[in-house]
Image (cartoon, helix red, strand yellow):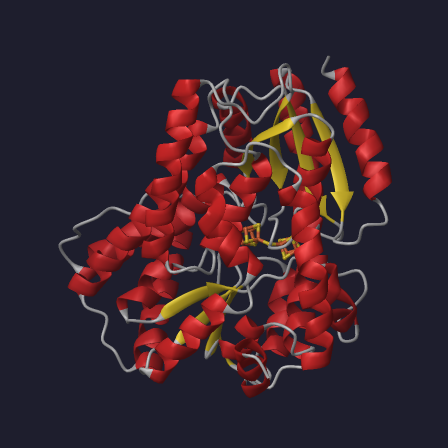
Length: 424
Ligand code: BJ8
């Protein structure tokens, strides 16, 4: 048995079914990424991580566990990583982005549940994802009903802590979110046995801020008319950012950025002359969901920005550093993780429309593709106001609903091509 199979077997995974996934992933990756010309050389690190996505990082997490560290699995950008890292814990994102896991999720969930939830539950119950096997504790949040109820199933045999997210943004809701952060601090301290001090929290704030800065630097390069990196590669980096070591990730992204900035100076663009610049907004694109980027870019356009949780929403806004008291540090976390996250679970959520319009201008987008996962009522309901606002602003938009299966790819491609043609 090779090293990875031994590890997966020790984790109690279903090796036979998991092997099917391992067989399918390299060709899926190759079809989306290896067909591109002019990929930056410094993508080598991210290619390597993706190629052994269920091997390298899981092995690192297990090594850390042997030294007594705890691994926390999360499902949403509302959970402040800083709290976990301040207690010497490790964070790994757990959202599932593959159709492979959906049927297993459908065994216990209603079919009209969004694929992200079905895939996450399926990956856990089917024992076909090492990250779900490794996590010592899950941290959920009350964002949408589907996730909220699925946490009961996911928490059946793993410790689960749920953060209660207010859905309005009044001063009393800010206070409520601060209370939730305090409760999380206590939970994480009890679980890890490590006290979170002002010093450790200030340190972890700096670690995550550096990661945000590196990702923002990468996005900045995409604003140029010379586009040095494809949307597919940028998305892959964002997806890896959810589970990689944050300090190493920041370092690798900064190294890549040097190459990207040089490409801009040298006029090396991955976009063909006259390629339409597209901003994507909507629901998150969890790994390995590359479907929309692949369709858009293989239709001749270039994705220059993602306004979603696997895009700008993940790194925008820093947490204030060098706080002088725990209360101040918690207040700083609250502002970053409550005031500044514009998810459709809030009502109203006009700030998101402001963000989309602003980003479309900053990234000089010719059009917007608003792509939502099927059965996500929050985002599909919000389309009404989003489309109205974009119409007022004169920004063309194509709204699509899809899932992780490939059977609508042809139809979506036709609509994308028509949209690109309409953009002239
Ligand atoms: S902050 S977008 S990561 S909740 S799971 S809402 S697609 S029905 S993921 Fe999300 Fe946090 Fe908001 Fe971002 Fe819809 Fe599916 Fe629910 Fe989803």
